[in-house]
Length: 375
Ligand SMILES: CC(=O)SCCNC(=O)CCNC(=O)[C@H](O)C(C)(C)COP(=O)(O)OP(=O)(O)OC[C@H]1O[C@@H](n2cnc3c(N)ncnc32)[C@H](O)[C@@H]1OP(=O)(O)O
Ligand SMILES: O=C([O-])CC(=O)C(=O)O
Image (cartoon, rainbow, N blue to C red; front, top):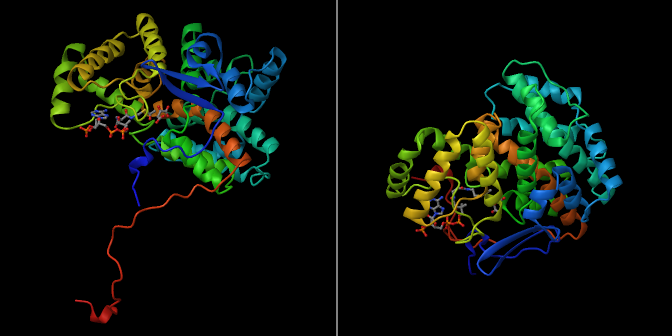
């Protein structure tokens, strides 16, 4: 039995959702055939969520209807608000998020229906409600009054409004909108794979999303952005970046926000867009985080030849949007929920149970010794 450690480069399913290819030394990322750079330039998160779920860009009226449907679903059931109020204020917001997703499942009488129509309903519900869960939990844990969803505002604007209690500027709202687009899907990353493994057992969509949120949280995946922010705070000034990176690498430690399973020696196309966003916000707000990030990037390229991944410049974007460090992973989830649900639906449609094998390397054929006779 050959062991394919970490399933590196193993292709386990066909998918029509997102495509990553390296062409002439450059990585191309497409959602349903549309290039990520075009989507970042021209699209909105609502449109991209529609694209991921339905496979096509919407017409004007389809987008209006879809956006309305999301707006109508933003408010949380009182039971979930009660749950958030009962959680310890020290809970990590990502734990609050995954607990709430699980709780939402208890309130859905169609929880076990996995046909496409009901699955799309659940997907829209989750896409609409996740931002409210995150914003409400933050307001509750900091003893602030809840700011209810505002139907006049777009998905990204409304999240920042519910979090901060004021309507964001156009630049801030667009920065988050583009960030959510860039995080919306990424082929068979670990959290999406976890969601598909759960879906392959025909588990309900909430269970699949809980599996995905749990997997996203680890620092080798979406959890890296929070660690990046810890690093930016520790480095504190750009001139300290080089020695920080050099010493950390000499100690054999990893620099968070660098390296990628798929983008080896090629630029992750999302980082180009995120760097632009981070720079734009730095010019309007606190320039520190972007400047330290640039200095770290330069040092990591110099001492290890590694490139930043999607979590690296996201950190300075979030910091300048006033998002607390421990909520960075949640923002990733707010974007990725569209991709997760699209993949779950795709898995349900043409399902084969995902069940790989392990090569057993432990002891074999041991003789059982009764407990009284064991030394
Ligand atoms: C949204 C996302 O999930 S993006 C990834 C977010 N995660 C991070 O930023 C955490 C830091 N990065 C990493 O740990 C890795 O690059 C991963 C987990 C993302 C990818 O891991 P893999 O594809 O398994 O690569 P692997 O861990 O084998 O690394 C290959 C080599 O690069 C080194 N390397 C990879 N990333 C880093 C890093 N961030 N810092 C230092 N060295 C690194 C490894 O030590 C290894 O070196 P070696 O061959 O001398 O032992
Ligand atoms: O694809 C991966 O392995 C990780 C990643 O960049 C993502 O999930 O966006």
